[in-house]
Image (cartoon, rainbow, N blue to C red; front, side, top):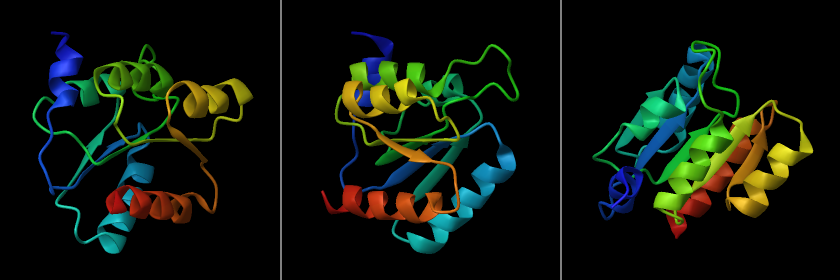
Length: 141
């Protein structure tokens, strides 16, 4: 069995976890604090500065993964969020993934939505409110 499939196919019922994959540590911290304030029922929020680090998390299946697209601030050779999403979705097609990015290329947006079943939210003044709405939907499932 593929390593990624082993990692992302297990689940813990009724335990909510959010992964934030963001190379801008200040932005990730703001997002974490926002989520903690608006979702006290979330047991765990884990932050990763690269998609590769997120893939190494073997024991938890997150309720939601919030993934930046360009993750090369700290590591110039880091994989893009979209390539990490592809690996995760192969292992577990039911993962709830939000691609949060300042990326405006239509190809990135369309692949996120059509090919990988993810949700694209642009980094702007409304981003956190849109994330809140989507997470509420995921928690209601």
